Length: 387
Image 1 (spheres, rainbow, N blue to C red):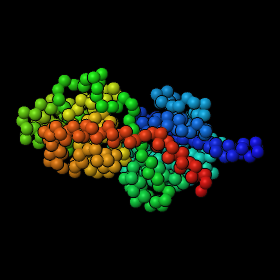
Image 2: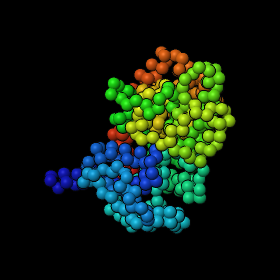
Image 3: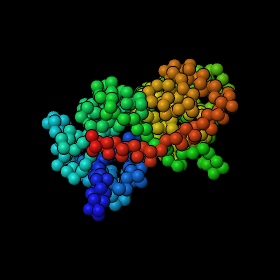
Image 4: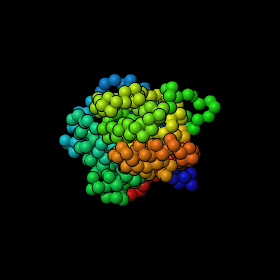
């Protein structure tokens, strides 16, 4: 009987490899997903063993910036090889040179859109978006987000999509069997993202404002928002608000700055730059309206952060945003500046609507859980080894 119990216990133990390389590129939605999923797995996967795998040549200090689990059932396996050369070689050969380092595993999961062409190990891959990963791609980004992502989705035994929109896009774009593509929604924001109270920080700006968050790249559609803001000021000349855009200046920043000048908005549009988590919380909590006009999001985490902080939200009705919003935001055709302006003005001029949205947002955000994400991800691993 002891032997039988030991065998059953051994069967329940999974040795799981997780490719965390995509988190090393710096702060991003994918890095946040990886860090939070690992934290969730450390809580729900105590019966399993996890190998956090990465391969890169230079700047090993990048690993130190990541929030990685320290539990004894997690280990880090770093191979000092040039990742770009390695991935190109594998794709050319059609086999994985990395598999020699991954022998003591049951399953391997690529957390950042790609997985190598493994022959022995069953593999899963998380797709965060299909296309649109980089707005102004160089040759490497094009290879990673187009060639490698498509190949990984086709060869992986299981594909995890972070929204129903991403799932349908993947099935259509890569011709996948729908049965192997599972939607596993991301979890919620950290505990610091919550509605304001007496102890909450004041906004790091001094005037009432509309808020947008995201890197200044074309798909974020900030040009339509700037035009909508101009229309709003024309309709309400006494409006005291400014438009604050918090995010890194991507390739589209010069064009957006030129548009602001052309429309005569000058200091009424504030380019805040990248914000720390504490600054983001304060910005969300004190915003009159949060506007998320993006035209393509695989999930759209700023939308969830804003709702968790009780900000009234206007968002695009495109891509994954309606699923994430879940009825707790005003959704519009964000390609139409008039529609955006009307929705923003409607909230500013209707305290009842604003109050309703402020109450609905935190309740909606609370429905997202990283523990649930981790549990569903573990279930995929278990299914892979049974099928």
